[in-house]
Length: 103
Image (cartoon, rainbow, N blue to C red):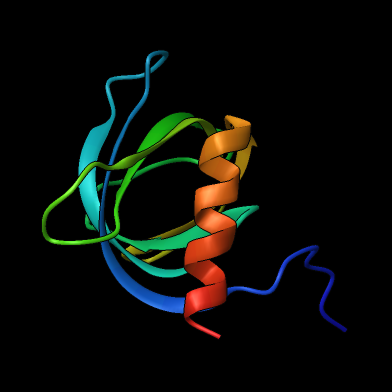
């Protein structure tokens, strides 16, 4: 049984992340996205519980969506899952619209 609050859609977007509390920063590719979180493929090692700032680049050009707080919920080799914990209402609405366009 799936316990997710939101439906995730398959995407291939660039993402950039960094942590203020640890020396962690890098780039990755979003593999799926929902208003509540995403799955990221990246060779950069993160740890469960890390708090990241995450920027999503939905197109080759244009402004990124900035997620002020994203918590690492799980890790696997070369990928990890994020839950968005601090997101502006305008950004959340943009992500909702973007996700609807992939359904």
